[in-house]
Each structure stands twice: as structure tokens, then as C-alpha cells.
Length: 420
Figure 1 (cartoon, rainbow, N blue to C red):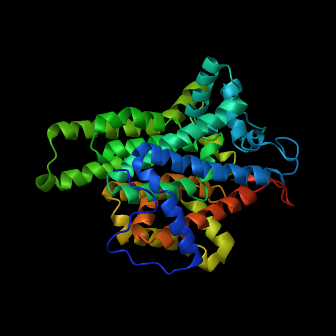
Figure 2 (cartoon, rainbow, N blue to C red):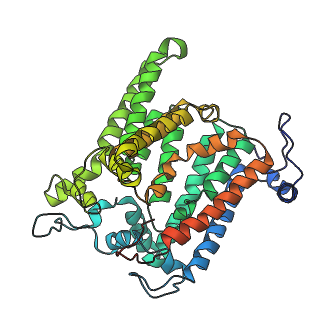
């Protein structure tokens, strides 16, 4: 299917008001008409690189106003500007690897170190560096950018399993312009992890369980997404068993899906086990993760603490429960139901995982990227060109907010800054 972004008109679509915004958007749609003659991968690639160009312009504009930071002087160029924050930790892995021992203070509390960051992204850059001779400064953002392209292509293929070409492409547009989508072109592991999640979900919905195993293993070495994926696979198998009389569930599929569940469960804990094996400390990974929080790992509690901090002791404890109720209602809405049971289960499992282990802060926005299937639900919500164009404009404006507020570094009065 090679439909364009703006020329298809659905029979039951409601005509949008003849506003200036609508006329401009209609003209844009006509200008994009030649896209229909391109293959799907070319359309998706053009959408992705156009979105990344917009994010590039936002980055370089904000960088002009960046003051001196812990990573360098004021007004850095693009490559140095996208290489700040956690990119520094990945660069340390690229240059020095992981420490053989967990650094601890006199009280035995773990200090911040490389073990909090998964190895696949820096290892990929290291391999390409050995082949090309190029260094981190150029290779790392290039690898992230290309992994983002791979993610976008995989997401389109996944969306096409549930939607026609135009709607799937609009889902991709929403993903590519999402407010935190600039992260796809910086030296973080998000773009690589998203590509692997999309590929794993695609194999699962196509019931190619054995093909999914190597993808899931790599996914679990890129970022901590293995636990919710294992929960998804368990729920998927449970539903197939429940409906086996109606839909069938051959023994070979049972064995293959069981193998995927086992592999997902083991891979989910592979990195903490590797950290234990290398350092000799069973809690090497979890202690390192807690070094950024300054507290012990307690499931669910940080959300209630944040609620109390923001809303007080009476309404605060109810805030996480309200968020859960709103998420449940949204995941059961008509538009979200159209993305299919497996993608809804993934979103529910991932949200549950964030609720269990995440310490809510400004970096929480970045953690929402694996919820990309909801971009298709947003495309299902309305086929109005005015609606879709307005969403894209709003997303781009919020990109400016995200880069200016969170990516750009400015020391707070009490020290530190809000992390992206």
C-alpha cells in the first residue's frame, strides 16, 4: 500500500471547517501527492527524516542559548549538544567498558557508574568504530539516528497488521513527531530499544514465536524492557489457551510460544546476572540503579511518595490509583481497542512495570517511548485532516518545550537540573 499522507478522503469522514489552517494543510496534502507512487519504505523514511530535520533545527536553535555546562563551553555545536546527559555514560562504556567493582563510599553505598546502562548500543558503536575508524562523536548520534529509522520502519509494518496504509502512515507520523522523539537522534539507547521492541511485537502478533527469541534477547541487552515483555508473552499464551477451541492453538505453537516465554523471562534478568558475575556482587545492578535515587528499591512506593509531595497527605496517596484508573479506561477505549489485544496488553504491561519500579521525575516522559502503539490509536481517533495536522503541529511545539526545558542544561538554585 503506497497511499500518500493527505490526498485520500474517506467516505465517512466529516468535512473540516474551512479555516486557514485547514486550507494550508490541504495544500500540503496536495503537494505530497507524488508520495503515493513511492514504495512504503520510502514514504516512511521521508516522514522520519523530515521529522528528524525539524528536531535538528530545534536542537541547534536551543544550543545557541546553552550556557556553559558540565559537558563543555557555551553554545556548543549540534554533535556536542546531543552528546550531553546520559550520553556521557554510554561514551564511558565505549571508551573504558564496565568497572570490575562497584564504586562505594565509606558507608558502602554504591556510586553512579556504567552498570546502570545496558551494553548493546555502545557495543554496536564500538564495532562500527573498529570497522570505520570513526570516533564516538560522529558514530554515536549516527547509529542512534539510523536505529530510529529502523524503529520507524518496523513500527509501520506492525501498524499495517491492524490498519490500512494511510492510517498506519499517520501513526508513524505521530510517532516520529512525538514530543520526546528528538531522543531518537541522540546517543541514547532509546532508538535501538524501540526498534527491537517493535520487531519483537511484530513477530509476536504474527505468531512467529521462534523468530522473536533472538530479537527479545537483543532487546533485553539494550534497555530494561524484558520484564513487561515476558508478562505480555505470558498473557498472550494464556489467551490463546483460553480461546483454543475457537481459534486453535497447535501443539507446535504451544511449544514455540513456551520457548519464547522461557527466553523472555531469562533474558529479562540477563543484565543483572552479568553484572553479578563480573563484579561478584549479587545486587551490583540494582544498587547502581539506586545510586541516582539515593534510596533502596521499593516497588510502587515512589509514586505514592510523589503524590504526597505534590498533592499533600490526603489526596496524594489517591493520585497513583487515579492514574491507574484513567489508564485502564483509556486502554479500553474504542480507538485503543482497534490496535489489537497484544498491543494493548503490551501497553498495560509496560505501564504496570513503570508503576512498579520507576521513580517519577522529568525523565519519566522519555520512558513513555515504548508506548508507541498508542500512536496508531491516535490515528484511529479521527480521520479528519485538520485533527491530524493539528496533532503534528502540537507535537512539534512540545518538542521545543522538551528540548528547551529538559535537554538544555541550566543549573537550578539548589544545584543540579531537571534530567531529560
